[in-house]
Length: 611
Image 1 (tube, rainbow, N blue to C red):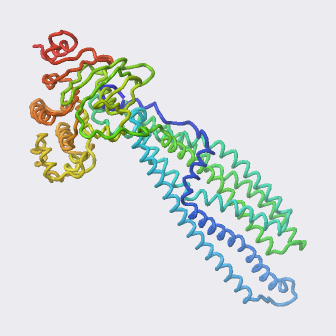
Image 2: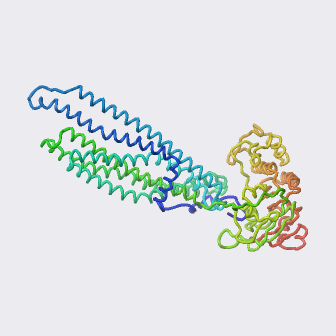
Image 3: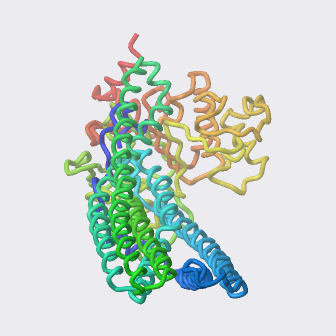
């Protein structure tokens, strides 16, 4: 984060990726964490597994009934085929077999339906819990996390990655489970029919398993690369649309389009690799399965002719071969999908593992009546290893108005961020009314300050709701009064629905200056004991600034206030002016005192007002 500018990011350079990963670092650990997240729903899972086992057992039973039906038909037509008598099929017995098969398939379908409903609910609850956890996490991470990671990448993790986990977990676990039971059950029943034919089938299955294992190991990297490319692409798209004014103003449409197209092309390449390895493996496995199937058919026919097995048994054996091979083919697909889900889940868990803002174990008692005495004592700070602030020391008495001036990058906004504990200092101390701010609960500390930033921020809601953002229980009359003090009431009433007009940060008919007035009204309504104004009037015209300044003067009476401003005309009446350069305070004093010194403040002032 720039020390003085929160204005954003480079709309064209998006090659960095603070959280990206080229491959899943620890699939086993991620799987364990997913299983742990499923523990609260263990009884739902157990019920689903019971229903799944019931459905598989019924499906495994069906070929045996089918074999009996085939044998019944064959025994009825065999005398006629051999010229020993007429066709004599017991249709009563055959009808019984048909009814049993219909009942088995119907009941199996019901069990499968219930199991899938339960698993859909389990998957949705899992993703809901992960969303709630990641939402709570994002509320606890320090501001540094949002400064060092791109919006598109964060959005990709909390949307696309969680959706992939949902899609795969909804079916993958149960499909793997039922596939394993089906394969084992089918092999056992195949051995009971003929062990020689079973060994041929097992040979084909083993080849399929080897191919599946190789593909699963290779696919993890492809899916992780695809998710990384998706995050970069989302960043490009988000910044491309939000930066249209700057792109058109600097005639960078061609360059921006090239970078967006490059991100889309990279996503296409990575996605093609991932999808190819997911789908191409299925025909290969089927080739080996069909080869084994042909061998079984030839040998099985000779066994039937020799009377070693019945025609019904060979027919049921073919069904069991298909039942054992199809789940294997499906398992390869599911395992690849599971790898993609694990890669996505790992990216989600990386956010959850981010360092949080930690409150002291025993937070200091709330100040009964905050006075606003603030002191910086030998404060040191740096965004990296190098210190930006080496020794910042000053004290502000209650009710004083403190102006902070200096060139861009001098550390003005950083000073305010340290006071709010958006960042942690590396040395010294900051105190409010004699209490070190590290002793306070962060929420309480920040509640002591009202903050108006250089960039206005509006959320999707009515004008009244935006003004009441920091004080939700405010009455309509209080909202209107705050708007009047901020000189915003007159233009709000010109909106189609007045204070009930819906607006947001991206789509509103209000100008930047009018949005800033609403943000100022928000701070006025919150009525905090201390104020932090970071270029609060930079987006309004000079005439409006005069009105706002008068309103702010009334608001700041009796309150300790910090004002960051480039226009020195707005801070001439400040009690203390701190002049910053390269992170440190180089001058301090009143307007007249600093002009008399003839130092940096005087140079800045003369540069703005020289004729």
